Image 1: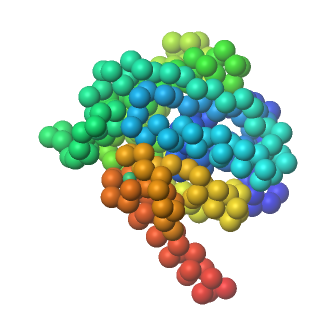
Image 2 (image 1 turned 180 degrees about the vertical axis):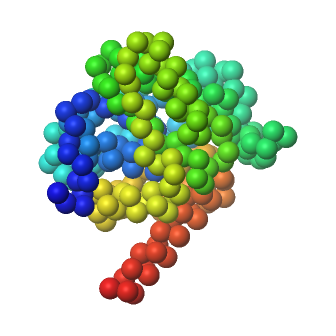
Length: 248
Ligand code: ZN
């Protein structure tokens, strides 16, 4: 068993909630390493950074090229329109307003209950497609404080979904307890330098939807909360990589 395949491949099917960002791209590679059949699901809810949806095809194609096993396991992509979510959430992610901290202590990018809704729709699709495992890139390590990204929320939702649909879904959160730098390191473990470069160049994090110049950490405006997180994480990852090289 090599480092690249830390566990035997499960014959179960999996559905990855795949936005086209760094986290969900890493989750897709994680799932391709573990499950015999992997499908992806993206949501269009009128987000300002809808450009991330366009990154999904490039990322999927790039991963299929990385390993023969991954190519064989990668199944269809699904996109669901959730216009209603954009309509009920008056936030900086779906409106042309400034991204700032609000009185609740959450940034104005918070879309109330977004992950609860995403995962409920993911479960409905997984039910129809016969997929037992649902993978999401939520994380409560270096996140923006969104309560629907927390471990307790996801665990409670797993129970609710299984009761409500009389199923045995497993909700996986491979990034829950790691920071952005460790997420890059995880990508390196899963698919080496090629996967790191693919995710760096082709995934999208910027809330403003800016692609523009390719920075060392990827594309983006460089100043919104998502870009700041991504830049800090990349720099920390690069620093550890340099340390390793120095010690070798
Ligand atoms: Zn940005």
